[in-house]
Length: 125
View 1 (cartoon, helix red, strand yellow):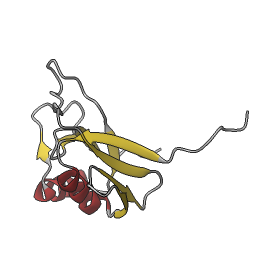
View 2: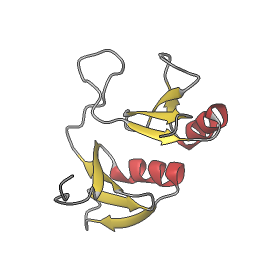
View 3: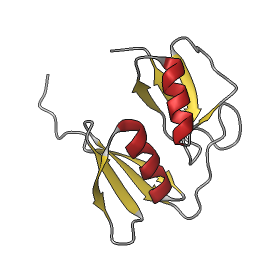
View 4: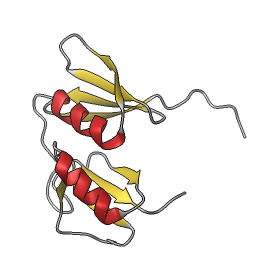
């Protein structure tokens, strides 16, 4: 095995409103704001490994999943203990459930407030 060049520092997510999306993921994952540009166009959250960074894009187009012209741009799998309880909690924070659930006993496909699909999952590495 070779030595790595570096470590993953952040996963960046395009969105129309960084305040809304950062607030959602902060509450969903228990993260804290680590960095923000003066105009708050870029906001980074920390507390669970790599930072999760929201980046404002004025011409943002949300993905259409599972079909459509604008394909999935990002996908996070979030480990939870109980899928039903976690899905209800995510919806209360602003997520939306989707009709197409390919494996509902293992993953629950949800949409964040900017329309990015993410999964709540009982699958562990």
